[in-house]
Length: 214
Image 1 (spheres, rainbow, N blue to C red):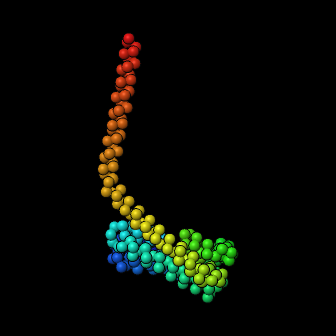
Image 2: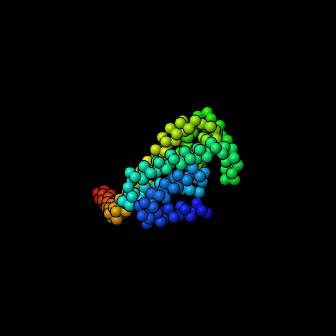
Image 3: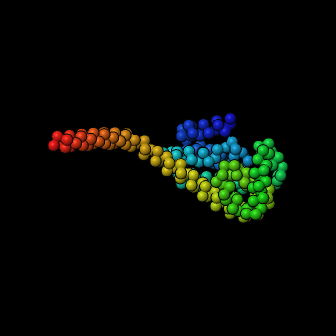
């Protein structure tokens, strides 16, 4: 219910916020996904995409947005790592995580074998994005290895999804701008096609009629 309300606000009302509040909201949600283990209810990725659309409309700067998203992602994951490192297995007993225990145990086992790869790929999966930093801390992965993989994943994810929203928004604006002309062109093409088929059929029937008369 909380998640649905947040998503509804982001999709419909974020465009009306002043630029500094948009930046603050994006940073808060991206940071909170992993830092607070609440990526299940904080739609960080959706927020980044919508903020990219807002940037395409000129309300915020896309370069600043990319930078803030990357910083929030890397810092949030680092906080999540510290929480996992200090509180360990007690986190896995939280009600919200208990039902995913099998998946979490598998992720921890994979982390111990190929930790940096799991950290990097986890950034691009909603569930793992919320829990992977904490699992890295629980598995006692060396922080330097975690930070390198985390920073690389955060950089690519943050820039890619910001630009995806940005260029998606630009494309939607173009479609809206030229949609009327495209509709008119489509109608003209259809009319010409129908008339062309009609006259070709008439010409064919006339040739057959002349051939029969001859």
